[in-house]
Image (cartoon, rainbow, N blue to C red):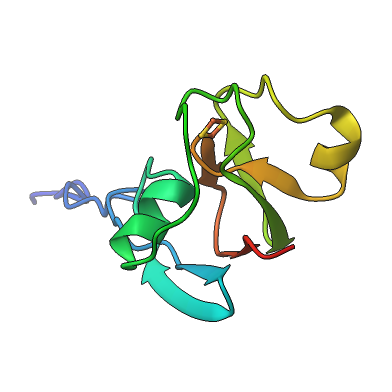
Length: 109
Ligand code: FES
């Protein structure tokens, strides 16, 4: 008798999808939504959505790209512009912030 071991070699990647939910961007009274891409910053997502968000240094130093997360969270690679209170209120440097999941970002706040 042959006993066949389970051959569950077809694994499903859990993080291979580049569409993990939406990035909703509100800017100049307009709203756009794009699928979230792994590792993409909010600023990059806003540009991909065809918007022209404000930015300058793109290094986390100036605060020009600042926006407020009204839903969801993001992780900033560098933050040399916002103080702790602003971060607690939901403000994010969009040039450094990568969404942790679906987010709504308001540049008009
Ligand atoms: S563009 Fe300067 S902190 Fe984002």
